[in-house]
Length: 225
Picture 1: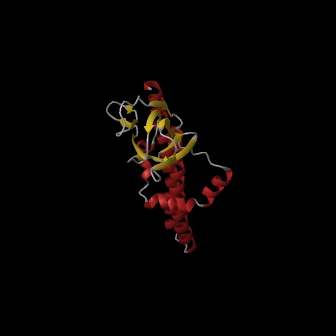
Picture 2 (picture 1 turned 180 degrees about the vertical axis):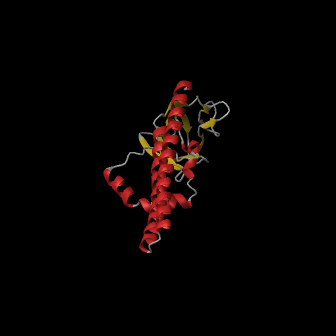
Picture 3 (picture 1 turned 90 degrees about the vertical axis):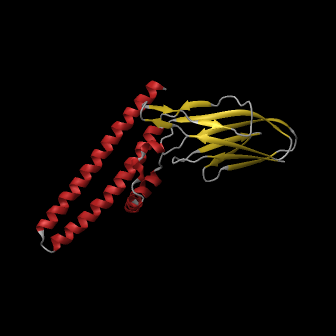
């Protein structure tokens, strides 16, 4: 007999859950939403679903690789319309978990719907996420825990993207500037040199602005819980 646990989720932020059943753990994500478990006897079993926090800790190798691939990363961000501007859609400030008892007497599919946290701009507060099990009745309320580290993770992702885009823009301007210099066109050389400096300044200011914004949202989040 087989138990299938299927996640339904439609959102911008990547999300994953550990599904624990009979001492085994499997992971479901938006790209791999089903976990299957085999069991031999009928009975009542405990099923636990725990959201996995997204980690952005980079090893030294990954940091070096990111530096080497900086031009490519910048191009990807440029052609993807620099989607990191929508930071709120990428934040997961809460983690949810749920333990339930399920009666199994044959092949069974249990689906759960995850609704991520949303930021209410009018109330300036986060609406907590939810877990719902449409096929099950009398389910106890899920547990919600703060995931305050996600604010820094989200900012770090934005910072890396900003640096990558800025690198490509400045590199293009500098190439044009030195081509102009080789042709003794000092006005064009100076113009693109100034544009390069302005691009770097805009990048730095953008990162400072977003950092302050994320810190402010973090403090507000901690106050309101």
